[in-house]
Length: 547
Image (cartoon, rainbow, N blue to C red):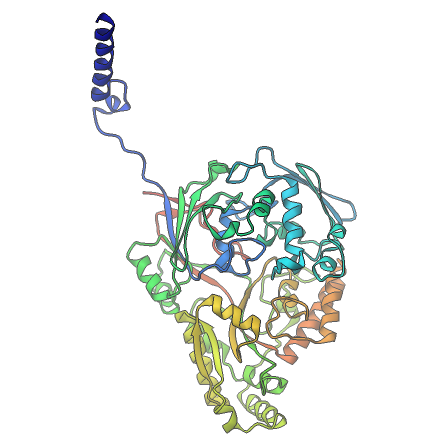
């Protein structure tokens, strides 16, 4: 009986302590209730449904913006926008600048707790190059010795010079010295994946429950065509610098709806701001508007397999009829620059000068010459203007107000200058990509953001074997110049070859450059730490929200 009484007293005392909170921090605040701090969740919009969140299969900014927050490469960009060591603690470069040896950090792990190893990197890069993977971006690894041969079926995986010397040491041998190789290792196709996870489950990247990554955030929810939710990765080695608890991304293509959500305080940041809104914000001097630097080119693909677009005079006429100054001043209104070639400003030539300026203007606005060339081209193809206008040709573009306005402006210019009728067709971004790749279009809006700071990131697109050569441009002289630029580290030779190549490309005009990008975006005043690297979307990894 005594034992039961003692037990009862102990329990009673414990209950009293719980109720009165005699040892809780509340006593130190005058008895006030203390609540857990509100979670810092950055809310924004991803303009399109990702095709894949597997680094080997991704191919656009609608995927890379997410991947850059949930994965990390050997190198990365820090909170100041500087290229620094990521998964690698350090690296060594051989005297001939051919061999790179990376040593991984201690204690780095995947979101499932597995260690990140050098073997994961070797496996990942060779998987990208494996022909059966069908990676659209495999060519970005071609600077590695043996990579191109393996990817094109002319060599063996054993000849690819990526080797895990031990768990922490990765050795890479390049074909030739590549000045921008370190920057490449921060690009999403170079991100590692967990070898064990992928081999056990080929569909690992399709479901948040099985998705494994190694970056500052992890994927916890993916409602297709609706929403993506990221959560801070507590396994991340640099988690102390990550202020956000998570990132919520709506998948929403309509720019006006996204802007209304931003205005209604539903978003903290908006990447794709309607052009009319950008102009209003510029006029009022809004502190929330940022005009980010962007190394990129907006252009139109012209399908050469559809007559009369196979004729260079027709393509040239279409290009010369476009008033690019009017488009950037009255339509896009975001500080864009009228295109005078395919390579945008911002990259250096052999003398340290801007490649664009030293190459000169390769595009002309001339309505009389445009009409003359277009008519000559139609005649050569045996097509009257009436037949052209009855062919139901359309400009294909992805659903967005800005894309529609640009297409409408060009449609009207072509009508006024060339006397042609061409329709408009909008589809979601992923559908547009698939149709371009399959050749199911006549004219399509496209664009390219540089992957690294060298002109070859643009000019390499129209190399005949490039997976992103949607116009299937094939000019042996052009190919030879691109190969020459890729096969030497002599900047005088490289730049001379690329300048010649761009001149040839603009003479043939398989694509029609419209303008060079900027990236207007808006950020709420209580959000800090968002910055822009010229070859990336705004970086939100190190953002903070002040309540």
